[in-house]
Image (cartoon, rainbow, N blue to C red; front, side, top):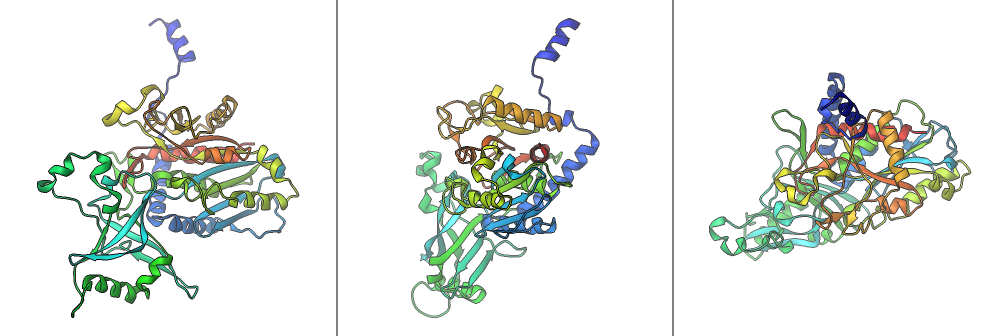
Length: 465
């Protein structure tokens, strides 16, 4: 290649590089330090309730305080609202009036899991089980024969709430869903992956030791006695309980080079933590008010009082606006939102469902997604060219390593985020997040470098004028 063509190629053609070829030793150390903290956050926040509590704990350590409706807010103030213990909204008040808009990141902190049914406890052939109803888009066959733990709350009729943790502490017993042995699995092997394990087979094994004495359901009674002794609950109390079964696994480094993190709940706590941590790490008052939203219920459509479609976000923003005498509609139309959700990382084991030129790759940084959705972009907000250009400019000025990608091949499937719900509020919005291998599995994998670059990207958004 001639020198002229080489110069022309370098100037005109895209030349994305692996992020490890672009960072120095100092930034690599920052990557590892950040990811160590992120792994601790994951282990502390196995459910949306636990995650919200940990977010509030970190925020208060960083000087945030609960927002009091009607109070005056001045530049530099740091406030938050915890919505029913399941979602968190935070704001760092900027020097510009909020009528000029806010810089918003919106992530979700719920993840696919197994919820206990309202009447979950039963015994069959002297084995006790909990019946479950899966939450979110899971591949059911992945959730059998792995250790599980149970977290949540039981609301009693006297107004008290009991916190439940089974399997979450060192030394605790775990739960499991059994599968059929291969010696007797000939008929099961003929089924599709979707049919091999059915929803009603996702039953958690609780115990096998019967209580002494006569009568039926002695194993069930023995289990209920143990629960009553520890938590003071009866079987009827399951009616008003929210108990979630999640993988009993801690976040761990993956690969001989320790370049990746394996864990449950990367989707979307990897972006939620980045958005939160970037806000908490701001060392000066932003120009525009910075807002972080950690929402619930995204995996089932963002409905409900703690989901992104609820009025909770609008109420929070209206309270901020009223504190400065601004109109909410004016603030929203001048705001920008980075919808911070994960995207699919290219997996060469399943390369036929990806389009290589438009896939996200591990170690190439935060992935921008102009649109998500399915088929003909159904369910996408489809950001404008100006919006993508705006974010590109912010990232490049802040030396954020980024890439742009689609979820997979056209018509191969699809998925959505909270982006359209923010855009429907007349907020300029773009999707961006960490590429994930084995998304929605009980154990997902991300790149450490991508985690850190996503944090850098969130911080750059907050600091933009």
